[in-house]
Every structure is written in C-alpha cells, then in structure tokens.
Image (tube, rainbow, N blue to C red; front, side, top):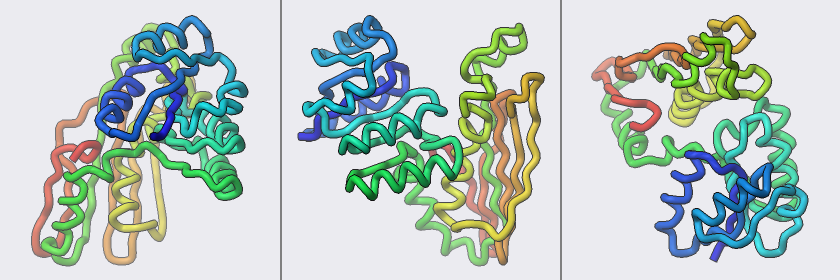
Length: 255
C-alpha cells in the first residue's frame, strides 16, 4: 500500500483521486492546504482524517510515503524538493517546474534521496498516443509536424474586465506555454527528440502575460510547428505529414 498525501484541493486533484481510486495499492491518507479549514473540508469530502496546513509537518510525517502536488505552478519546485528531502516520492502536476534550473535541482534531490520524481503528464502515456507512435512507420519519411492546442480560458473574460486571477498572473508560471503549450511540446519531444534549433513568437497581454504563441522547431529532415493559446479557440486537428501518408490527430492533448 502506498500512502499518499495531496497538496492542492482543486478540480485536478479531484480527477487524480478519482483515477487513483481504481488502484488497489493506492490510499489517500492526508490533505494539505494553506488553511486548516480548507484542508479539513477537503479531507472530510474524501474520508481522510489527517490534515496539514504546514508543509514542514507534512514532510516530516511518518504516515506518508508519497505526495501528489497540484499547487500553483510556481510552487512546484520548492514543494517537491522539500518533500523529497524527507524521503517522500513525488508525483507533480505539469509543468513540473518553472524552468530548467529548477528542474535540475529537483532531479538532483530525487537522486540524492533515492526517491521517485514523476511529472503528471498523462497524455503521452495514453493508448491514443501509443497508437500515434505505432503508426509513424506507415507515414514514410516525416517532413512536417503541426501540433495545435488553443483553448479560450474561462478566466480571460475576467482579465478583460480588469480582474487578474491566477490563470493570468505572469509571476505564477501560468503562461500559455506552461499551461497549454506543454501539451504540444511534450509529445513532439517524446516522438522525435530534441530539435536542432528553435524559434518562437508570442502574444503578450497588457500585464506582460503570454496569452498565445507559435514555435518553429527545426530537425535535420523535418520541421515542426506548435501553436497554443489561452485567449482563442482552434478546431483544427493536429497532424504529422510523411511522404507516404499524413496522420490526423483529433486532440493532441488527449489523442
């Protein structure tokens, strides 16, 4: 039995717990929130008695083996490192860190303490993604990849009214690339590896927040274009173009 705690009491945590409940060796044992009242409310909802409003107390608990972290993105690195320093395994929501330097610190901490650090990037582990990978040989020599995920955020209307929520706060690592674009970047690198060169262009909002962007990635024999947005919708499929065939992908974020 793996005794889990959760950091974050939002909708994504609800979805994680719903899925994890199907595993016979998963047990939710504790809930952390910044306020004790919120931790108690969420714990009661999930039939859990152990609650924390102190990260240090959670890290020191001998009743927890692993922690699922679904806090705001800019908190991921510090919270993960603290938990791993106390020999807790960590499953961290995407994006796992705000930048490469943060991730390197997380990686080093995991190695030093011999614990598992895993990013909760589900789409590349799905049966649909496995099907994409299996079909690549059918396409012949691959020349163009076009992955797109553009979704108008429900919080953008508030932003336009002058209400700046976390989803559009530039200091919280919620930029369009971090929040939406990763669903294009991650499968591209998983399928084709690192590119030889990268060019990018972004649309920035009045407060400096990145609302949308396009990335052009050059490989030795092919190009890839990634388009992502939190301020507009797209209904076009993604695609991988080969010389023998083209593969259409309905939703790259959930193929």
